[in-house]
Amino acid sequence: ENGLNPYHLGLRIWEDIARRNGGADGSVATGSQTPARDAMFRVRESDRDSAFLRRHLTEDLMRELDLFQYQAKGDDLVISRVSDEDGWQEVKNTLIANVGMNAIPVIRVEDGDSGGKRTLYLLHVHDGRDLHPEYAEKTLAFVAQLWQREVALETTIGGKRSLLVQNDRGFTVKTLK
Image (cartoon, rainbow, N blue to C red; front, side, top):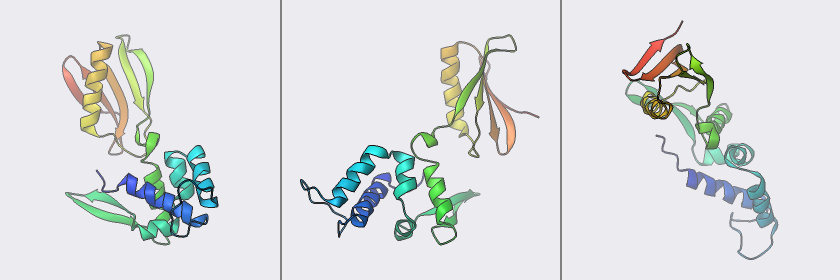
């Protein structure tokens, strides 16, 4: 879980939109039509989640908010990118890739009768982010309960093609060749 407060980030972006459109301090008087207020209403009508960040989270605002990216190294979290001249776009892209519908793994049904045994065969469209094993196991258990038969999910774990299987014998993970 990251420490980014999405409400604070959103508020700061809205204030920046207002400021860039004539709202001197980033605020907009209520009840009055101003260029800043009009701009904010246009953005509200057209942008959601990732589009909002892509269009309105600026390099300057990212630096002001000290946004950075980290990764796990053993038991520690280590800063891997900062919002400097070289890294801000990558930090922004990572943020965009993890909001709204982008945060939900894409899983397709490949076959409802795999192996002629009515096994439900699912495929995780891997985008560089591995599934969380504990969530995958719980989710497959629920799907198997609904399907009333074996469920298999092909994915990539640690760079290796893997098959997660849930059946009446439990949950297993196999490495595929």
